[in-house]
Length: 125
Image (cartoon, rainbow, N blue to C red):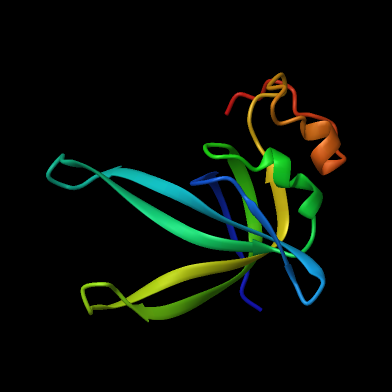
């Protein structure tokens, strides 16, 4: 089994759907890697991931644009043809674990209610 773990930011609000009567959340998340090459030039590369979550659909109201999340799940790659006719590939993630991140005092996330765990104290990272 392959497992992908990453911390990223939501690109749009989560959408709740039903597939064959089973609730499903759909959302996009991005992780940006910033680095400096050997010539001292700064670069950044953003990876977008299309996510689906069959569990924890009750968190939909908290999964809003710009929220930081920890995601864990089974990745897959889907190929498609762009509007320009070029072959492309997209990263997809079947989410098995989702945690809202951010400051403990951020009322809009309410991490105690969503994850069922205690909110993190002020962490140094």
